[in-house]
Length: 351
Image (cartoon, rainbow, N blue to C red; front, side, top):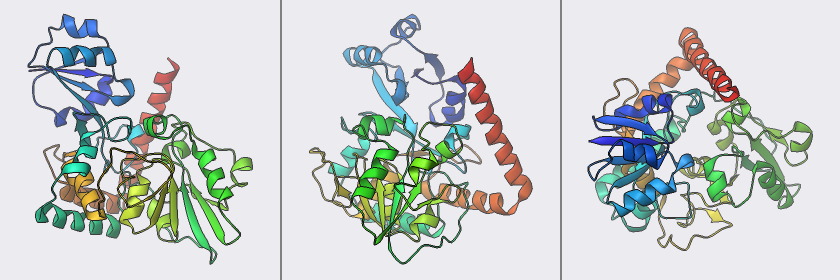
């Protein structure tokens, strides 16, 4: 069976190749290349969403060839994906992709129609407890620390990457500064606004930095180098455009306001400024977590690369977090690998 990968670099495919069946794998960039390699009905096409090729998709639809979009899932790794660490989970979506509200994804289909049974709901309840108790997020390299704040209504505003696909497709023209301004406009002296920029922006890997001379016109505190749970612990509300942090805040029992159309909005759990008419069902948090963390992604062990479960991945990341924050040599190794990867990425972008 031939597998065609569109929009993937050699390094990117190397990091996730263990998620796919054995067989011939080809990285291609055009329909001509696909045809020269004799694609047929037994072939499978995988596309990176940011580089989806509509010409190839049309050809595959006309010739009954399966096409999937591939992206990181929601419990990824110890450190940033942009530092090229192997992901613990990905999604392989046959309909669309979870961060694109313009069309139905496999996740949205599950949320609309899946009949949740007691077994999967019990697992989801356990995951909610484990995620909260162990302070696990998509990335897990930032430390937890108690934040001192005044006795006010604490609003946490989540910054994102300006050129991220979830912002481009589901942000409706908003960016982090615009979000901050909107929250500030709807606040009073009784509110205290905290801004949490995206880790990729803090690391200067991606776009989205806001000048501090501007940012403090619209917030009272900026938190950069602490994990999200440090902020969740002391906030009353979370405001986001499309960030996964909004779902993570729901799991921590916080009130969430969405200004774009993230995949977890529109199900009756968030205060939404936009509407998606396809999302017809009211869900509880356990059902949302069951679909998002159990039914939708594929998991592979960080240690063995073998098929795994979200529960097993949470245990692996928990152990890695403990080692990272308590073993100086392990932390140096991980940080050195990350910085090296970032440097190589910057050199590549200059060439």
